Length: 179
Image (cartoon, rainbow, N blue to C red; front, side, top):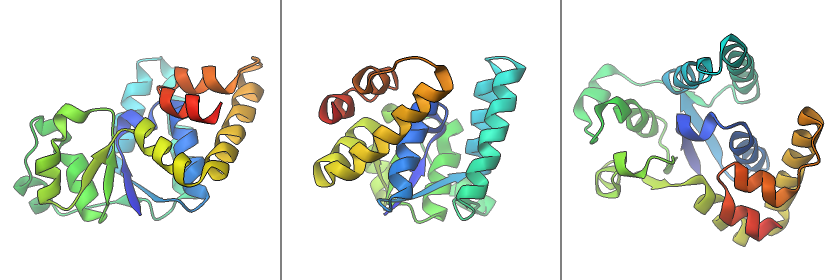
């Protein structure tokens, strides 16, 4: 399965790490575009220069780990597509160009299912998607989440608990399932 990650699911660190940890286990192939990564960098800039620098470094690591994840498309593709928010058309163009099965986003209202279906793409929020993967492969997702929890504890020197970490990462259904 090919899954396009929207900026809003890449930007939050824990959410991104859980998704990519699941992807490294072969559940899906992640996709994004240079514009999605640039949007992440711009969003991180709101945290200050350190936030932007961290996003740039993490984006470079993503590109190394997933060298085939970044998709491009001809301008003619984006110009023929329509979404309620024209600023999101590039996301759909990336999904179509990358032959994505699904777009993972928190922005449901700007990605109507009927419009996506016309392009052969569906939409899911990351919590619902990951909960579904958990139901099919609980050990795999639990291991991925445990890996992220260990890293969160190491980086923050805080005694994070799984449920609290995942809830803070806007993954409450997954948090309940894994805990």
